Image (cartoon, rainbow, N blue to C red):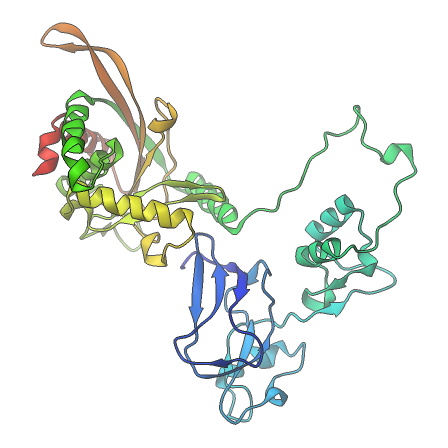
Length: 406
């Protein structure tokens, strides 16, 4: 991923000494959005695993293990701490290991037994909560530094505890600070925090909002779903919105664009991202070429993307990119909200719930179902008039849903 700087080693599917064929899956890596399988590009023997399963925050391009080529043995593997050798392993002659799978060497060495205990801040907090003596914990981080995984392993194994505090001032009382549990950030949550902070800090947002009547759409949806009982499909209001957005983007290519310092990027295809909530955060899988897909095709693709997103099975091209995003909170009863642009896209549409409201039709006040849509736009790429014209077109498509079937 172009935005990925670190990942987690989920699990190794091979162990040291196993033969590996080109194309075989060696391990799984957790990225900020999904768990990815890593295939071997060379044949050989897995000579050494440098970064164990469960390790978090492994930097991109850091060596995580060595594959021995024909004629090589464990003796060719650089000694622990030889980070420079490991980094250059790919370019070394046949007498050295010729294939490096990852970067900085992180071997398990005991933490110092006296003096200062080297541990990450998170490891110290977790150890304190568990009453664990860090001096008795072996660190697996660089230079024997104790990391989160070491503390968790020690706690699970019944590690040595520190004495309970005897000072009354050390105990948490009703007058003291509020007790809390420190829950480590997931990689996804850290990426979301970084990217959206950058978006609100660097992208000049402006917002346009419009109410749209849903009565005709709801009637058509009911008619189509009755037919779909036999055909095997069931359409949601969001499927209609996705289709309407795609067609509106075709009519307003300026909205289907992105700002760059080199120039304006006018996309030649409409790829609509749909926001999906996961326990670890938010992901936006993409319906590619949505303008050339029918309602039923969009519905089936969204259901498949959402299911695989929740199982952490999306492939990178299924959630990286997109030219426009749709975020729908209407199913939670939210009437309207202002979304944050997901760079490098220029716009995102926030969709609220359809609510019964008085509407004027033919000079008469009637009861209708009204949905509010608010679009956040990057003012560098999309001007106010263009944003308003896009919403006008979208409103026309939503309120004349038969146009979505053409």
